[in-house]
Length: 156
Image (tube, rainbow, N blue to C red; front, side, top):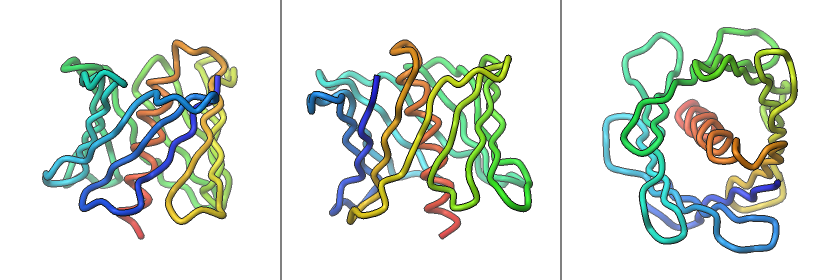
């Protein structure tokens, strides 16, 4: 299953539209006014399904992930020299990226590939393709991509 992740061009807070391959809306993401990034994820009917919330005052960037109101894990950037790496406190997952920080792979606990994320570079706004091996992991992969994008925006 593929998801197209597109940041909206004109918005005061982070906002994104997420589409399925057929062009139908999968999720909308609205940034909330807060200390650090706080991104609320809504299904097409407008029900909140998840939240990505930045922890402030940490050594390395860290984001907490919520499914509805329930905390399910976190993602934190690891200190590396050449290519980005993120540690996920969720089902033994971790993320490896290339040195340009445009392409990532989400790996399971046994090193199996769960999702591949690639950034499209010829767009006005941040646009990613999220290729998820199992549709059940789509929302989780989206939340981790949102956290990585927010971390990169904070750094830039």
